[in-house]
Image: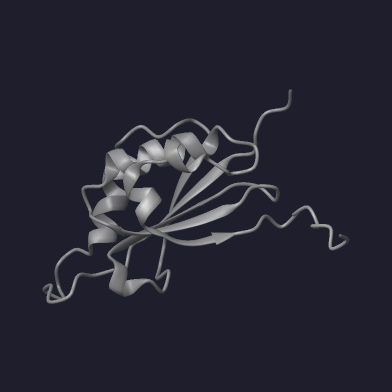
Length: 129
């Protein structure tokens, strides 16, 4: 069995909460910093990104990995959601296709999926009946 491709965990570092001090550290930057200290699985690479265009939905993260995995965008995360994100990333990284069964995802991920993006190398569905 071949090793699974690495997973990228992208964390938006520019999100902000409504009414927050414009000079305050952004919640996404705090989440990224906490995740950097959290001990992610070896095959998960943490990367900061600027703006995932989900600003009104709290902190947002993306899990993607290789050309044959589905990509997921999750929102409404708080800067202290480290355990949820690590759990979700660990489960995602253990899959070959990115499809973690719904009931096995962290509860927050079940209720706050912003987008699910097909893999670059996706099977073509049959249109024949």
